[in-house]
Length: 124
Image (cartoon, rainbow, N blue to C red; front, side):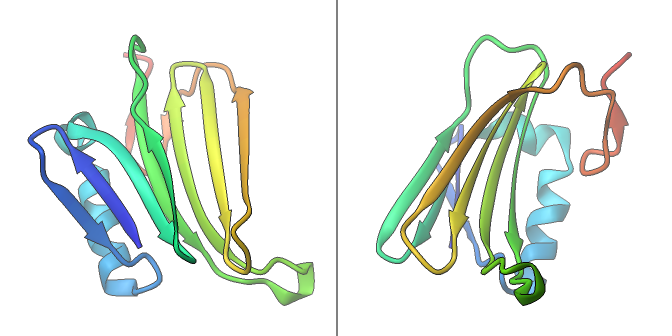
């Protein structure tokens, strides 16, 4: 279950494994106003909560969450992924479906010029 914490104090919930709820989430997260109102995201899985807060002091920022289906040929058991792109830095949290394990990666991606989720260019 994905929980989105908003600046007005509300918390929205989305079951990303449900195609209808996943589409609802995608439609919301694509809008600039909604992106600006996100203060954090939490995945609740196997009795644990994994949260990613909105970082301060960045010019361009977007947050995203997705459900990843298992791929048995690649020995991938599926899970949920939280992503925060902040200027030239990206943090990704992969919450594995079959365990309480989480993998966190931080990378310097360079300037992101195009985001297909937001459908806009950052070089304006």
